[in-house]
Image 1 (tube, rainbow, N blue to C red):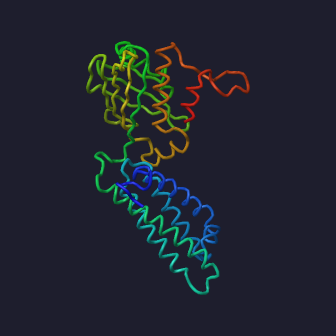
Image 2 (cartoon, rainbow, N blue to C red):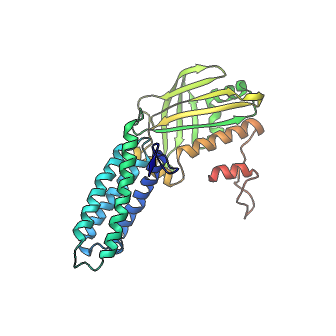
Image 3 (cartoon, rainbow, N blue to C red):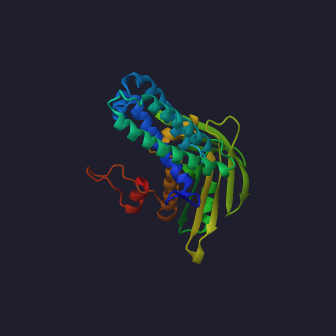
Length: 304
């Protein structure tokens, strides 16, 4: 099954993500329809409450896996949960149970998932990633047909950022290296923080971090690198932040299509539009029935 730390074409990280979504899907089914799940796998009706508890455990494990960069601890919790599942199935395996065939099939399936959980847990436990502390890490880049000097100068005037970062309400410069940020939060709220520049190389690099008391603790950098062959500039953004609501908040944001990875990708592409064309292509106000912008590349990127 495993070859050089992989299962087929699946790396341990990709496998962990799949197991995370599997946990959430199975957990929701057990919480919402425990009787139907029990009937499907051959477990007696008296175990309905237990199935709901197991479903809540599955959801918690899935959330933990999807919000950690190296979620070995949550995967080991799945291994423990698998043992409970197997014990429940074993307890239901009696000669009087008319659904022994279903129980046997369910037991085989759980045993297979247990093997995957064990493999993935061991692989991700071998080399734990530094900084696996629940923070969300993002790295994206885009190539823009402008000089590094132009791009750096525009970005360094932080009050320009809301022009292409539409989740930002405003950025107020409060000092030589400090600024106050206001951004859109969940359910129509706003979040605010003060930030400072901690490292800067003109026309090459800006690094920042939020100050104590921030609604959303964050840090990151933007680097401007000349593209090979004189084809403009590569703008590379790295950032990490602790989302409002913690790990659960990050997963909910992903489920709602508001993941930071996608937002940074959109922001960078809109930065490219501003610098190359002077404006961001919008779809608001287009005639009825027109669901796409004039840029197919932008539509494909936003929907990916």
